[in-house]
Length: 234
Image (tube, rainbow, N blue to C red):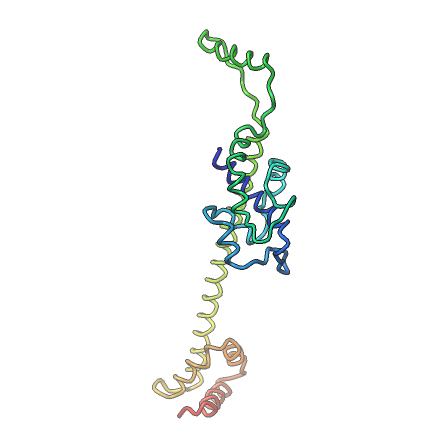
């Protein structure tokens, strides 16, 4: 949990840093426009930060709730050529200490005494007091759920793209096969130059569509012969 929390905090800090950085541009879709050296320098040792090249994290609202006001984002002071990586290193120790206590609330002496007494009842057979799930745990579980949903959507999108590619290839194969059948039905010789010609011709989707649309075998044979003449095939 501690490592995950540290990563999330650095992710949110870097996002705030990117928004405050006056030397960065924006692409038409709103993502950060920066040189590859900038990303390499500022994500050194923290590969999870590279995802911000493509936009904000999908759970930005939850990160705002968790870390707003507790991050180093460069908005209070900016030094030219000052990198996020350096600023984050300076604050990382404090950040980890905050991470342990984040989401907790100060407890009174009586509360601490109550917790100790509750623990002591375990040895006497009494039921232990059930701890209430902290806001931090709820937010972390919510982020994990969103991440899982995002992975599922990405997998589904990739599968759909793969299926679409296979269908397109199958349609192309069927189209070429049909054109070959029509070409031989038109009367071309098995060992003639026309066979080589249709191999070139049927690579083009337009040529296949046009050839199949010709009204009869005579028209198709004439078209193939004209194609051979045009390409100086003899």
